Image (cartoon, one colour):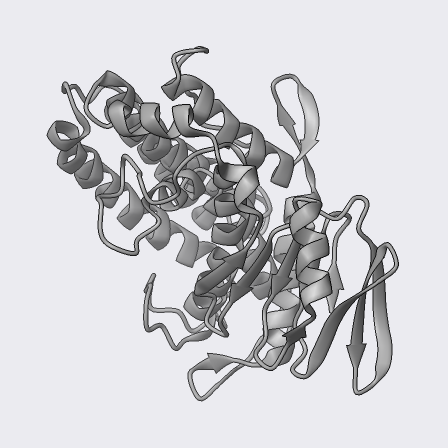
Length: 341
C-alpha cells in the first residue's frame, strides 16, 4: 500500500477495502494493514488485480466526492467509480464542444502543445545542471537541446488557423520534431549502464519505457479526475483527435505535466540506481510500487503556481478548472503551467 496526504494507492493482490465508521480500512488475509479517515482523502487508486471493494466503501466515497480509479499492471487506466452528481454541469460541456469549432480550440491546442515542449526544455536543464562539473560535454548538449525545444515552443505558439482541424497537423509536426530532440537528449542524461533505445509507448517491454508508461497511467487518472470535477467531458479534446474510447482531453491536459511529474520521477530513480526490474516484459510488483510511490511523491510536491506554492496535484486541478472557465468565456486565455528547474 502507498499513500500521500490525499491519495491512497492499493497495490497488493488479495486486499479488501471496506468502510469502518468514518474511515477507509484496508485488510490483507484478515489483518488490517492500513486505515485512512475519509476527511482529507481525495482519490483512491487501485493498482493491482485481486482487490475487493465493499459496496459500503463505494457509497461512502461517492457521497464524499472521492473517485476510485483502476489501472492495469502496464499503467492502462480501465475504470473509474465516482458520483455522477459531481460532473453534472451541462453548460460547461456545451461550451467545450462549441469551442472545438472556433478560436478557443485553437488557443487550447497551442497551449497544451507548447506547454509540453517548454517543460521538456525545463527538465533537460534540471537534469543537465548535475552534469556541468563531471560531464561538461553532456551538459552542453542538453543545454543546446533545451534551447532548440524553446524554439519549437515559440513556433507552436504562433501557428494560425480558424479551427483545431486546420492547425492540428502543423502543431503535431512541430511537436514531433521536438519530441525527437527531447528523447535523444534525455537518453544522454541517463547513467551509461541504462539499456534504453529510445521512447516507445504501447507494447514497451524494456525497463525505462515500461516505467514511464506505468507512471503516465497514474497521471492520466489524476488528470481525468481533475477534468471531471471541473465539469468537462474527458473524451472531447482539442489537440488529440476524437476516437471512440479515447479520453482526448485527458491526453491534452497531461501533456504539460508529463515531464515534471513522471519523467522526472522515473529518470531520477534510474540515475540513482534504484533496483527497478522487468520480468517477462512486465514491471515487477515491487517496481510498480516504487514507481507509484515516487510519482505520488511528485504529485504531493509543492510547485510555484500563480505566485504561490501549491501541490502539483492541486495545480492539475486548477488547470482543469481554467480550461472550463476559458471555454465558458469567463476568464483570460488558457496558459499552460511551466515548471522551474
